[in-house]
Amino acid sequence: MMDYKIEICANSVASCLEAQKGGAHRVELCASIPEGGTTPSYATIALARELLNIKLHVIIRPRGGDFLYSSTEHQIMLNDIEIAKKLNADGVVIGCLTPHGDVDMQRNRELMEAAEGMSVTFHRAFDMCRNPFESLENIISLGCDRILTSGRKPKAEQGTALIKQLIQQARDRIVIMPGSGINEHNIAKIARETGAKEFHLSVRERVESKMIYRNPNLSMGSTTITIDEYAQEITSALRVEKALKNLQQTD
Image (cartoon, rainbow, N blue to C red; front, side, top):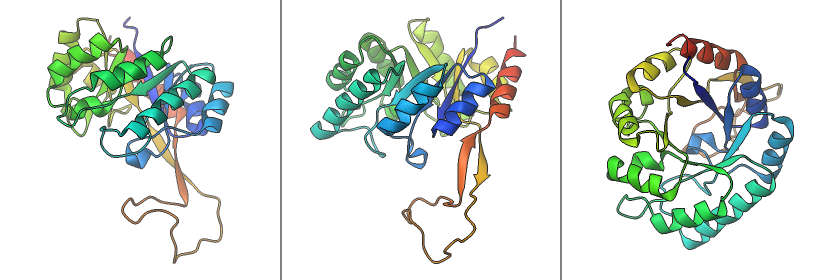
């Protein structure tokens, strides 16, 4: 039987616990999911570590937007890696690019040095690279353990052809982990089409807020990113279980 692994993109400690309950191998802990994920708070990392028995990876991303960072932002990432290490996270998730869309070898190397002894995933900054095949080799040379990618498409199911090519080029030197839009319904199909062994998904469900009084004239969030402030999206343990079951049936 194939040794498949599921990583859950967890937006809270509650999602982390649901991921663990559902049988996930690992969580990637993030804040600000509508922005693509940013580094969670110290307390969130600390409590997740205290309550989890499975692997805990922390995204190191100081803001949303592109992956070209200032010197100040780079220092923030170095500091956040030290915090994640201090809190006994198993790994970190990183990625910096140059203005021309190449892997920033110098800055990523510095992040790798800070993360020594931890597992490192290169996140979907990879999907914004100019040349995916050249970038793959550069990321391998940095010593990263895996690359998270949608195959340069909005959803991984649309990018399976490139994901398969990347897996073939990687030749087990690095894990190529499909992510974006993967769920219990399409995970087996993506596994068959790509040959991937690790998968990144969120499988969240809407949980209604218990607030009774709701001011209809005011929102606490930005008007440019629309979110429902009276509901939370939390990972579903049942959906994690279903995804694992469907994945194992591809053997």
